[in-house]
Amino acid sequence: MELVTPDIGLIFWMTLSFLIVLAILKKFAWKPILKGLKDREDSIRESLSSAEKAREEMSKLKSDNEQLLAEARLERDQILKEALATANSIKEEAKADASKISGKMIEDARVVINSEKQAALTEMREQVSQLSLEIAEKLLRTNLSNDESQRKLVDQFINDIKVN
Image (tube, rainbow, N blue to C red):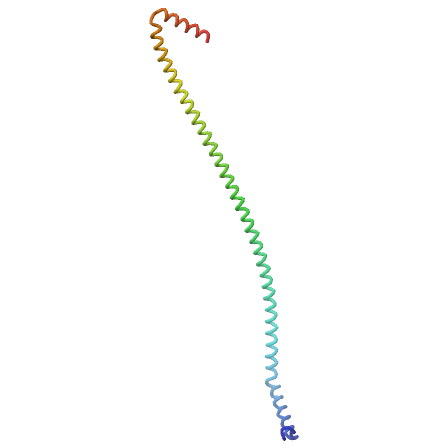
């Protein structure tokens, strides 16, 4: 029962040893403990502020990335429009060139056809004139066997020349 109701001497020595331990702790341990707590508090505060700065920086980077992405999309759309316009102009140029080439080919074909037509007509005229000469020669041989028929023919030619 002594522990439940301590004696006055026990209370005195317990108080004295507590005060000695408290003085020793105050002299040697209290300042390092407080300094450690202060350092810990400062490091937590710095960590929180750096985390807040990192969060703000991440938010800024995110907005910058979104802006860059939007600009890249606009640039991509512009490049696609330019590519489409270039493709259309190349297509139109190709059509125009094909039209010019086909027109030139048609004109060349017309020229060739006309020249061949003229050559054929010339050849036909030559053949007709050759045949006419041969027919005329045969007729003249048979018709101009006497002198009088020859004179009549010469007179007729002279009259025709004057008329023409």
